[in-house]
Image (cartoon, rainbow, N blue to C red; front, side):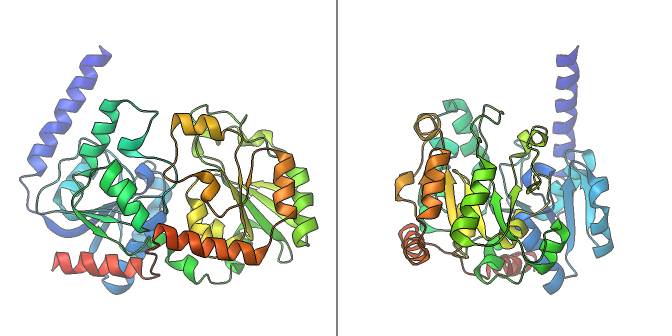
Amino acid sequence: MKQKIKYAVEHGIQNALQLFRLLPLKNQVNFIAFSGRQYSDSPRRISEELLKTHPEIQQIWAFNEPEKFRFLEEKGIKVVKYKSLEYLYYVMTSRVYVDNAEFWSILKFRPEQMVLETWHGGGAYKRVGGHRIDVNAREQQHAVEKMNKITLFLSSSKAFTKYVIRDAYQYRGEVLECGLPRNDELLDPAPATEIREKLGIPEHAKVLLYAPTFRKSHTLDLYDVDFARLKASLESRFGGEWIILLRMHYYLSDRVSSIDLPFVRDVTSYPDMQELLIASDVLLTDYSSCMWDFSLMHRPCFLYARDIAAYRGERDFYTPIESWPFPLASDNDELASVIADFDENTYCAAVDRHHADLGSTESGTAAKQCAERIAAFLK
């Protein structure tokens, strides 16, 4: 019975897509971020830039829980439910579609549409798409086929263009090497006073953000940071009083409550990662590409990774993790040691070399460039 219902739904969707493709295209832009979970990342920055410079262009945003984002309607933005019939209608009749992840595979765009892919990671670290060891050939090919529906792909670096866009996804379309719109603000960050107030962080406190990447295990076993010792290490090396912000992958959001320390705050559900980066003095991660974003501010970033060998076998990296400029620790003893030995001048020089080695294309004007490309396309 379930199979019959599923088939009927899919058949209905296909029929709707065919019908909507017959309708005329409109000068409007359809946005989505992280498969409808957030109003954030590069799509948000492009959207905001369009609101400033081209308010006449109609925008549509898709969310899993649209009722949480009705505030956007006050700005003239249409809010729809992701994967609804209304969503399909707007996707198929908008001349521009903007996404930051692998989009719904059922979508079949028209040649007259611009499909702008911003992606959600910078630099070139863990393998993705057709390069992933942990997915089968069919899944790899599926990812490649989806990405070749794109008409314009953004890139944060020459290495990302080569390894991810051209090799992993075998994409042969146009690449705009302007950096990520979400990172424009990190090249010249404004004071984080308002962000820190929203987070309830005292003015005098210093902040470490712990933001590890996703693991298939869906457990906290690999994230066994000794937060009390980490706080002491930070205070010993950098001085001041420290607060630790904890941002786990959303798959683990229901497990974070097990960490009950007065100086650790759960920001897993905070809606915008870039704001958290700007508000932080130090970043602790493992293989997440947020290290690339954070490095644009030249603030200290440390890596805590217990499972390097296993991760290499499961997914692997584009460049050796030992070549990255971020001090690396595999246990709490090493983490305390690399923090104690941290030298700012050595670190900043290593970050600059890293940006040069990967061929950074971060411009600080990515959102503006994308908005102008969209506006010109619509004209």
